[in-house]
Amino acid sequence: MARPFTTATRPLLGGHAVPQPTAARDPSLKRNPAFARLTPADIAHFQSILPSASAVLYADGAAVTQDDLLPYNMDWMRKYRGQSSLVLRPSTTDQVSKILKYCHARGLAVVPQGGNTGLVGGSVPVFDEIVLNLANMNKIRSFDAVSGVITVDAGCILEVVDDHLRTFGHMMPLDLGAKGSCQIGGNLATNAGGLRVLRYGSLRGSVLGVEAVLPNGDVLDTLVPLRKDNTGLDLKQLMIGAEGTLGVITAASILAPVRPNATHVAVVAVPDYAGVQAAFLNARTMLGETLSAFEFWDSAACQLVDEHLSHVRHPLESQQPGAFNVLVETAGADAEHNMAKLDAYLEKLMDEGVAVDGAVAQDQAQALAIWAVREGIPEACSKAGAVFKYDVSVPVPDLYELVEATRTRLAELKVPGVLSVIGYGHVGDGNLHLNVAAEDYTKQVTNALEPFVYEWVASKRGSISAEHGLGLMKPKHLHYSKTKQAIDLMQQIKKVVDPKGIMNPYKYLPEPEH
Ligand code: FAD
Ligand code: 2HG
Ligand code: ZN
Image 1 (tube, rainbow, N blue to C red):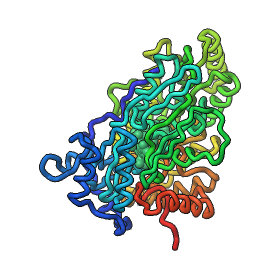
Image 2 (cartoon, rainbow, N blue to C red; image 1 turned 30 degrees about the vertical axis):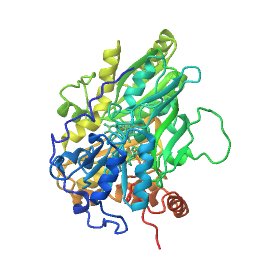
Image 3 (spheres, rainbow, N blue to C red; image 1 turned 60 degrees about the vertical axis):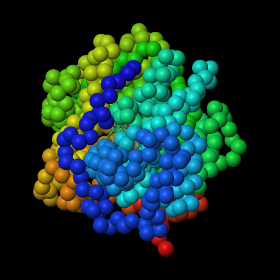
Image 4 (spheres, rainbow, N blue to C red; image 1 turned 120 degrees about the horizontal axis):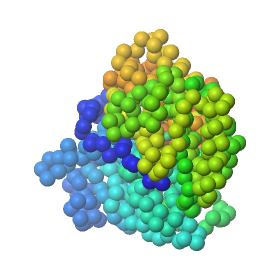
């Protein structure tokens, strides 16, 4: 089922003002003096590796200005802004290899960048790091219908790959609201979760092989299309979820499941969070193997969608304050069987008073309209204001408590400028998105939320990053989810793979203690 992409394609300079550079707003960030600064000889060298004029964007103030590079320096949320004056856009693995070999020798820092839809500040520079943008590496290398394995360049857009697979009756095992902009390399680098984890599991399990360029320019080729391979450490897993700190992913082989030919979508209104849990429990038992997505959002999220997305209409008229909506999707081979199951499920929810309202999509257009509400929430929220995003894993029964506790805290502290606190997400995976929309990214709001949110999550033994990663936002909070031993080991691995620390610096891990 194709879903409309409405979110990450908004015009970059519409809406809120361009933020101050990240480093100007956070004086604790210091440029690493060990990194070299760009010289005219560097630019000439990069031009010799990338002969196409549009592949080397250097802000010399004449042909290319710093403003021209804003889309590469600023993130989707308009929260983080770097000050790079050089963007490189290679088309081949060999070019990436030559670029990194040179950067390694010179001590030039590099930020790999995919679709720049990341939500933790990982995809843009902090200071003057070179942006290595993968958009020109966009070839689908092969698809084998027998094994279902697709091999693609890292810069392929997720939706393009999914559409390609559709023609063979297959699909990507992952889907997210940013599918029209995010790239496979970015998906792997963040180990993206999204809307299909409930059915197809973590992306880690679907990736059979990765081709990556290491920080010294060596190419690590693990692109084998094998489902089973127990020959030593599984090095591709090091690259998945490393957020560009251990190298640049240039290609991947992914197991693409057969696309189910019958998909049904329903939206149900429940009066409280207990209702969300009851609906989920019933979905698991009654829908069994046909259940393919289970998402939820609160009435405050509904309100933001109503207010800010004129093209999206909620299918359920009555949206009581304090109530919740759940989206249930089933997918399988037998349309009649699946529909009968979904009908029985919805009937039970209504009979038992779990649900107070509901609608089942009668056709593809209606199914897309229901998904548009869910997928439109991040965009609606960002139109409301500056958004503080927390992406956490906690046991399902405790999940919504965090939203309530956050509302209470912000009200008690009388924090100025807070516009809305909303909760939504992949409840079937125990993954909550807590979004706080505010007038601006102020210290007062940040200090009210952090470390409060992280402490709350740690008290439940949850994760402070369920699916978005760590980026620039979370390294100093990593200890809430990982032990000292685990962080030490990660730092040691980083040192071995990237001894000069040129790959995506200032991010992902805290600075090692000396
Ligand atoms: P970027 O944002 O460009 O980069 C993300 C990180 O990966 C950076 O650290 C970057 O350095 C690194 N990177 C990028 N490409 C490479 C590469 N080739 N090699 C090495 N490192 C690389 N995320 C979810 O998990 N689930 C969701 O449901 C979800 N929904 C979203 C909805 C919206 C509207 C938006 C804006 C974002 C959403 N995201 C979601 C977050 C984001 O889209 C994902 O994290 C996505 O996987 C990032 O891909 P990208 O190509 O945009 O990567
Ligand atoms: C989603 O599930 C994404 O919609 C984005 O992961 C969540 O913006 C967010 O907080
Ligand atoms: Zn999500």
